[in-house]
Length: 126
Image 1: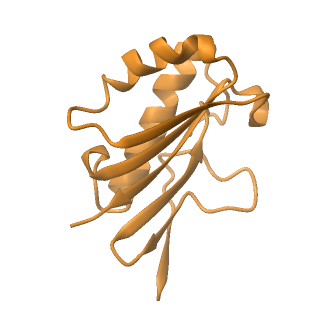
Image 2: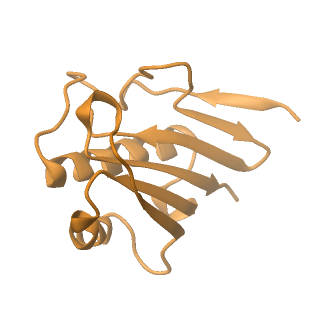
């Protein structure tokens, strides 16, 4: 199966050995996004700002791949403090409408660049 690499200047450039997203068939695998601002490559300040930036980054990658966040079928969230779980849900509801994608939320010890939240996603294009 042929794969297509998705890259957009509207999301942070990869800070490791990965692509922003890969399309295989009609499925788009979006790499984990942390709260980096694409223009400055600086981390947003605090959990809420980083979470908003994560969803903004996911949104522009979806668009670069030819979809929208409505096409996301699976989202994985990684939080360094599960005490922020309710706030994550509240912010996520500003970017997604029902029916929500399937999701996992996992507590982790640390994230790249000192981030406190990360999310990756799987999107299916029609």
